[in-house]
Length: 273
Picture 1 (cartoon, rainbow, N blue to C red):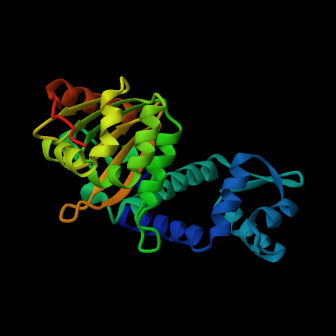
Picture 2 (cartoon, one colour):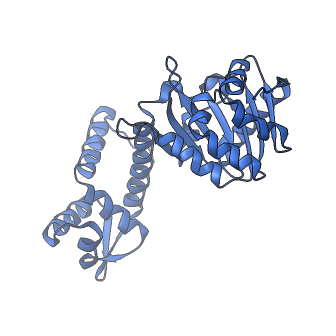
Picture 3 (cartoon, helix red, strand yellow):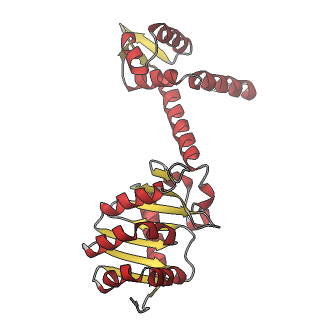
């Protein structure tokens, strides 16, 4: 069967349906609830926090669009309603992801590095806000506390310096750590925090390498998560930390780390207390 429609008119009507659904959060919630399984109409006010009369109007609107049907005393979505619910859920997830990255996307790895924004789906995105400028650092410290193996490649001074005490203690506790730094960053840390560096570098738990052409962002690899630290170019401030256990993103991070590590050379500068 071939359905002939006015594409412009059909698109306009589809946009109107989307607008109707998203104009009130409870409509999305009702459709999602009925997609999960049959519900009594009396169950829906408690699930959505709106009045019974509002639920009655919503049910009538959904029925008029053939999104739901009544089976005895319960309501459930039709196949049409399930399609709409799934598509809307995917759209909302993408828009939520875009909003979380809107202010920091320019500091993310780009397509030339094999990175896609979709890799941030289901990630924890921690952004530095005026009220909490060190939020990404705090999140990074939480990840450090919960890992036994830590590897890092890229720009790190703004990330490592605020948590140097925790990083030092975790290394001395036995956290296997490998860092691939820009040479100037390794020398800065050596000269500025020499007393912090002596024991970790003398221990068997820390290896430091240097590479002359590292990315502006940082990649941290923990036991079962990876984190991407995004820095503002002019100030070097950590603007966001994105961490995830997504398999594709972890594989990307592993490949980036392996590439730079293979090209790096050991950092052999002497530490002077």
